Length: 409
Image (cartoon, rainbow, N blue to C red; front, top):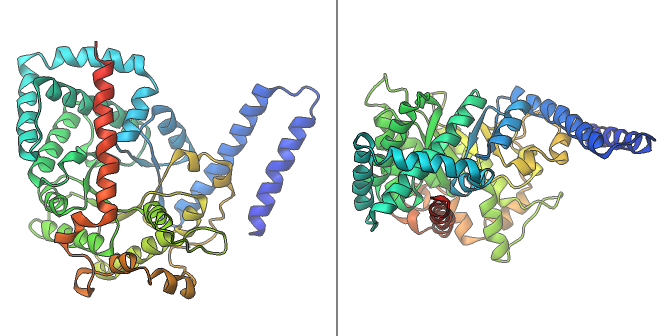
């Protein structure tokens, strides 16, 4: 706390000196502040990394990817909304690329991919037109551009999400994942650094196991329960047991902030002394502990702490495997005040607050494994946060496809 106060006072003093300068220039002032902030942020990221925690950024925008990489972030995650935001950041470039891709997919060499996508749509039970297939392939290619840019900036991985509308079809998710890898290989990308985002639904877990078995990396997303996370771990081990040479990896992504959002809407607000809701942090810490206990000293999937809502979330999860942080938090002045002097992932939460939290029926059941009375695999798809999470990916994906239609010549 004392160190944080000193950092804040140092920033305030620097700003005061600049403002009192008779030759004050607003542009130079902003540039100087940005440079100072980035130096402080780099220090914090290095300190977090010293405790074995990888810092990733949750974005697909090229300018944000470049800045995060300069600050020390080593990887990233994305989703349909972030892809759309990235495309809208340079619509002129997107229009030119779309024109080129229309010509590409009119050629016999690549038109077969349109037929394959039609077969995938049939697997998922989605009706389509010829133009729908073309727009879908354009979407995959433009996403590929963003993934390629990220891999060129980062030293680590980037996540590429399957069509969220396929959440209840393992066959469709596996087929699209293979197509994504094919597109990546065509570009000469290192597929070992690409993680296919698969939802932790009943079909998603089947798809994840099959993909790992076939050597394709998976980021198991939309994890809101202990049972989902541990089932993902078990599917990973089952797939890897078939071949010692299998190099595929898995990440498991618990969504912290979504729990806090959900309980707040339900009128349940349980906060720590800093005024931060504790549900998401408690879930993240508990899942981290459970996965470590079940995996022992053996090789295991890494945990990506996702849906981070505040600097306090970051402060409380130092020592976790991976933090994927939105740019608005990573680039904020508040981030530079984080004190990463020790790991905090193992710190306990006030027992009285936890007791109140576990009186909430849905949350309490979500914090138990299957054999402890938690959600079963058959119940995963009906979990309120999984339902909401699918909707929050599906609607932006539809909007992304609509955006591409608008950008077509």
